[in-house]
Structure formats: structure tokens, C-alpha cells
Length: 392
Image (tube, rainbow, N blue to C red; front, side):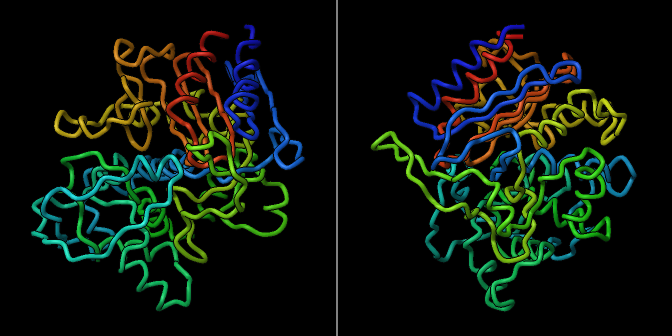
């Protein structure tokens, strides 16, 4: 193994693409084979222990946590969501298909929606638990919608995690459940489902069942001075100047105080995320023998759940040749992707540029950290994937 090309590319991202800092770790057969950090944003030395707003790579951990409960028989993927949250029994769907802005949200944009009256009709299909995992529930990414603002007004700015069910159930769906792929707040709803089923707060459940067992000490939903002190400065890329602009360290996707966002809320380091990714690459059991999922569940998670009807909507540039499983992209076609990773490689990315790649068949895990919204993901992530496998 020779990782000189990976190091050169990481330096290229900082020196020529102007991403302020980068960090990456690679594991093979459970052993770390590469670790490199580069860049000094605002004079801060970045290391594998530096933390980031992880945004949507939170989703892989959220779905893993929920699948632990599936293994325990707490629910079935085919169960209607209203069995657990009765407010979803009668839903309405917007006429005309709704607006799909999920890709823009995923790359770090903050979307401002215009309020207006939309014609709706009763939904024909119930939302199934499966629809939450594979982004086919009909939700959107509009956390500025009236139902959300109403809850914030009632609570003085607080947003308990379970209240996302009330907000989502009060808004019309973008499309008929189970008929499209549409990036949305569905995995935030999974966080609420975990609370409802487990009887613990979502954060407590993750702490007990994933973070503590794997030694992921930096991971948290809750920001304070000490958390921000170890966090890399966060930037916003300016497409006109092709340079980043320094912003605050706040996560603009958090709906309100106290909300534990399964879709975009975690803070953590590359080194700690790599402990999770490494265990997943070993079919769910860490080198220390900590089991977080079974092999059967890992294989289910990376199964392509997109139907022929849904697949055309999973059309983001960086996912050509991929399908979508239970909360993760999953590689389904070398001919389409032109990628070097094997079929069944899976993972996801985050709005500030974080990226996780998990390959159980070859026991490979790779985690990349950056902290720049408008993240250049279509350029960075497919190249990282190919370079990692070229080096291996």
C-alpha cells in the first residue's frame, strides 16, 4: 500500500481548491493504514481529534442505531408509521409533485421557502417505517415551515426531539409515500422513533449503544464552550470568488434548542467516526469485539431499495452508479459510476464535506473531514473513493 497519491490530493484540495483544512483516516482489516491532516484554518492546527459539525454523515449512525432495534424485534420495516405516531394516520399530499431542494441542502445551502397555500389531496399510501430509512416518506427539508415555527413559538425556542413528529404530520407531503426518493427530514424522524421505542432520549440511546461501546468520546449533539474550542473553524465556499469565507461554528440545520437531529446534528472527530466505520467494515463488530450490528443487518442496510419508479429521483451527480439502501448510498454499477470501489460499498456525506466509505467485503473503511459548507462534494468525494482504492 502506498498512500502518497492520497496525500498529494489532500494537499491539492487545500492549496489549489482552497478548502481550508482536511483530515482523513483509512482502515484495512481493522487496522489503521493511513492518517493525515493538512491545513491550518485561522491558525488552528487540525488533527484527527479535531471535531466538526458532521451534518448528514450523522444519518449513517442514526440508521445503524434504529437497525439495532429492528434486530431486537421492536418494529418491522413494513410497519405503518402511525402504529408508533398516530398523528400520521391521515396525511395529505401536495398536488403537482412538490419542490425538491434536498441536494442543495445536502451541499450546505440554507433554503428559504416561501409560505403559500398549496392544493392538497388525501394520501393513498400510509408512510411505512421503511420509507423513513430510504427517503421515500414524502417529507421535505423545510424546517422553516409553519408547523415548526408554531412549536418554537409555543416552547420559547425549544424543540424536543419527539415534536418533529407533530411538525411533519401537520405539513402536506411532497409526493405519495413510497413512490419517489426525496432527500428530507426523514432521518430526524427516525431519531424520534428511537426515542419512542427505546424509552430513552435519542442522545442517551446513542451514548449507551454506540458511542460508549466504541469509545467515541468526542461525539455529542450538544454544543458548549469546550465543544466549540476543539471544533475546526467553519467556512462557506463562495462559488464566485472560488474561495471560502469564514463563518460561525453554529449548525444552521438545528431546528431549536434541545433538538437532537438524527439527520444533521452530531459533532465528532474523524478519529472517532473512524472507530464506527471500522466496526461497520468488519460486518458490525469492532476489533475489540464490540458488536453493534449483525452481518445480516449490514447486508440489508446496503441493499438497494430503490424501485424503478423511485430511481430516477436519486440523480445527484456524485451518486451515478449508486442506489440507496437503509439510509446509505450503495454501489450498484461499475459501468455507470466508473468507480474503483466494489459493489456494495456504502456510506454518505455531510453538508460541510465530511465523507464516510464502508466496504465490508474488503474490510475497508475511510473517513474524511472538512468544515466548509457549499462543500464541493461532487468534485471531492468520488475522487477520494478512487484514490483510496488505487492506493490500496
